[in-house]
Amino acid sequence: MDRIDRTMVRVMPDGTEKHVNPFTGTEVWFIPGRKSRPIFTGIPSTAQRIEVRQPEDYCNFCPGRQMNTPPEKTHIIFAEGGRLIRDRLQAEEGLAEGALFRRIANLFEIVTIDYWKKNFNYRLSDTNRSWKERYLSTDRGRAHALSVVDLKLKYSGLSEEEIQRFPQERKYDLTDAFFGGSHELVIPSRHYRSGAEWDSQLCSSGELTPEEHFDYFRFTLAAMSDIQANNRYVRYIAVYQNWLKEAGASFDHLHKQLCGLDEWGVSLEGELNMAYRNPNMYNEYAANFAAYNNYVLCENDHAVAFVDLGHRHPSIAIYSKSINCRPCNHTEEELRGFSDVVHAVHVASGANISCNEEWYYRPFDSTIPIPWHILIKWRINIAAGFEGGTKIYVNPISLTELRDKLVPRLFELRYQGRLGRLLIAEECPVRPNSLLYYKNDFET
Image 1 (cartoon, one colour):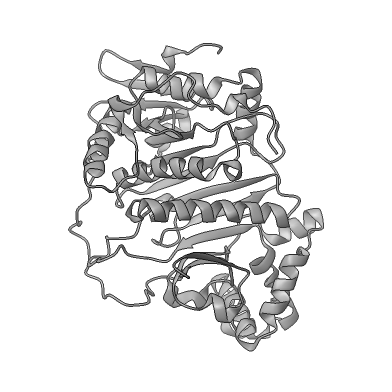
Image 2 (spheres, rainbow, N blue to C red; image 1 turned 90 degrees about the vertical axis):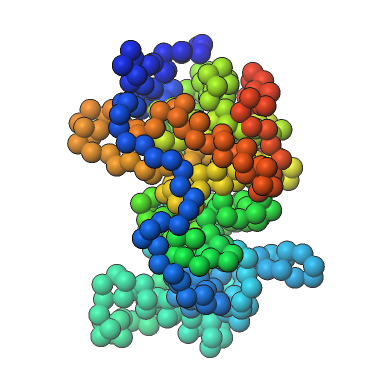
């Protein structure tokens, strides 16, 4: 396709809406009469009152249960009148209270450290090996790391007797994943939002302030850079956020995941091949198409959000306008603008909707420009036999209905002062080719 294909969305005489994702070919139907629901921000009838405890200890990601999670690679604390980032902490530092965000290894890696060791002869970098030695040199650090190993063995199905018989040397080897693995978590401190009384009042991305969300993004980008710097075999880092169990979260505690990969993945490879043939395709089939069809939700100088086509679940896309294609190369101002638009979509969606946040960007070893963009997918429908057999996915919300649910919320929230600076719906200038990524021929 070398022009905007208006058949990407077709509305049938009976109101059935059919749309196809221009990058993946995924076909989606909305059929009138299927159940939809409004954005619900109240207290569900099934909610239970919580016992307020400080520090919070409602799940293993809470500050009160830090002994159940691996050593802190980094955290952000309030200090000296501002925010201070502390790196590769000792047990005595990492287990202290007050961290705004913590970065730790994922206890159950998808791409494990054994994968890197056995397939690439990977070894801990000098930096990470030195940190491991310092951490395990103290009684408290050693006790903490080995207790987390025991917890992992328990979760893996071993009995207490088997854990006790497990070779101590092998336990020390297993701690390599805590200090030099390439699957990590970034965890905000709060489990519940400020002043919560009910167990439904969780601290979602939308419950963070715009400044906190910006810190969340900056902290995640620092983690990306560190993974790449300490594992030369990583070609791409999958960054994603699963919010609530229906979206795949282990705990109802906000967190992002970063998973280093030695491949780009078939889907991204396909998009890069398309972008090589048509460098302006993300403007043509995403931002411009959204503007011409009134799917734009909000915009600022650095990013634009719109209802997106052709996903298994109702989805919102947020695209960076920057000439820089990789997240870590964005300027502070660009990153803040992008963060504000992503945050606005989360605030408008509310904390009760299960969703995935997925990051897409130019791989480290690619010379093909593609814009950094994020998809937020509402996990409110379950694929069934019809979808599996036909590869046609049925969404419960049409594209215009999704827009019309979010736009009034955005206006209301901006009036309440809960959003960063942005324009909404018809206020947006929606200039053609506003994504400048295609001007970037090479980025280090």
